[in-house]
Image (cartoon, rainbow, N blue to C red; front, side, top):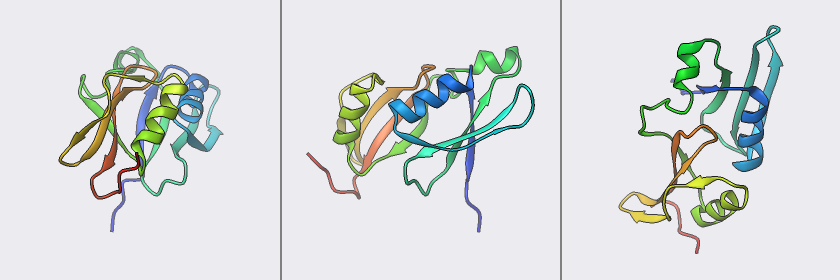
Length: 134
């Protein structure tokens, strides 16, 4: 058996990224360990999640810095599932998260696109297999 455990996510600075994921998205800070003078092992994940986590990796060179905010070449980068899209959408709006649209219904569920602190696109999705909360 294999499980995708952690995805590397390039950031400018650790503290601003932690603040965004914890305060704006409501994620939990799972680990924050100093590895060297300039490198930390910082892992965040949605609260109570059993899925993959994000390793917040501070960009170390010009090539990595150039990829911040464009980690998927302009496409949606990550897909965040929820059991209540409207609750999370409203809460994220109150916390300053930018959305590119209003929530919409698709064959696979309710979805809305939002931007992280660097401009990467994410889908917030309430899969059709989860009940819709209005």
